[in-house]
Image 1: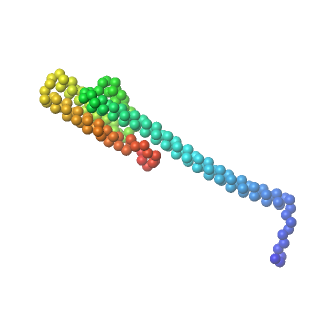
Image 2: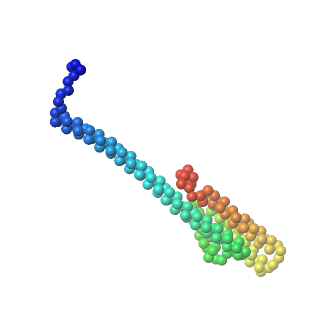
Image 3: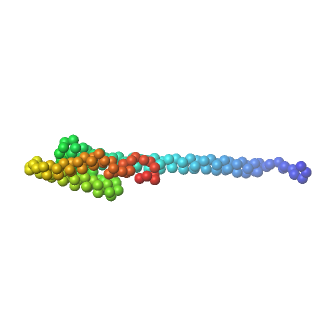
Length: 168
């Protein structure tokens, strides 16, 4: 090539070139490290979301279990449940206010009202037997039995353990 000649590189030029090359390599590695840290952080955030959803599910499932046990006590005994079972149920109703949509709390209060009416009808039917009183008690028992079979419907999709952020 005419007119172009490579001059010998001086020590200073070689050092400057090496410094630039080293800086470029360090920059690329830092970028890769930052990308890796970002990915790790994203996975940690996801794991925290899963942990939170699991904790909420556990609390919700405890409410469901207390409601189910309350209704099962009525159905298996054929009479109103004992006071400790009622207290556990009432505590679950109160917890539901903070863990579920408002309709769940409302539906559980309806279960409590029907169970209270059943208790009253049961006690009256024992004291004053008549077909009318027996029919009233029986109708309430059937309502509670039906609700026990469909207790999962009270809680709906909120009692599903999912990790899809679009579903809550």
